[in-house]
Amino acid sequence: MEIPVIGSDQPFLWGVWASIREEVFDEISDCWELEGREKKHGPYKGRLANSLSIYPETLNLKLKIIVQPVGVRPLFVVEDDQHVLAAQQKSGISVQQAVELASFLLHSEGLQTGHS
Image (cartoon, rainbow, N blue to C red; front, side):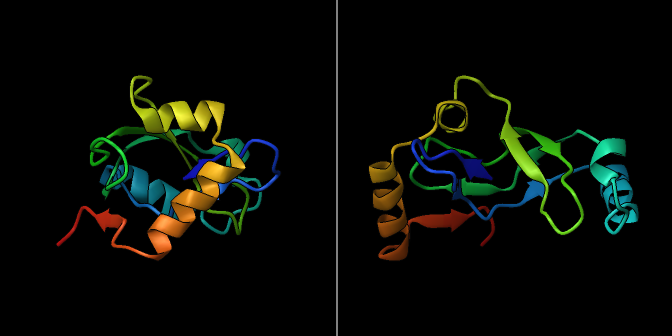
């Protein structure tokens, strides 16, 4: 999941998972190595399968999943406009916020998955 960093061409990246319907999984799997897949498939609906501890609950947030070119992971866009994570995806975060977030995550148990 990408969060734009204001003043940078590199986004802050969250390594997250999504829950999707079996049919969606099958369709994405079938086109995984297909050149031009991003023009022919998706977007899909899913739910965020992670709890990101620095935000209000993120587990099961509705997502739009956008297929990218071969070799690039799908893009996850939070669809709940009221959630801070969605706001950050739209507006971005400062370089300072990105540095603080990365530092927090590297030096603590900042990221908790939705799995035990």
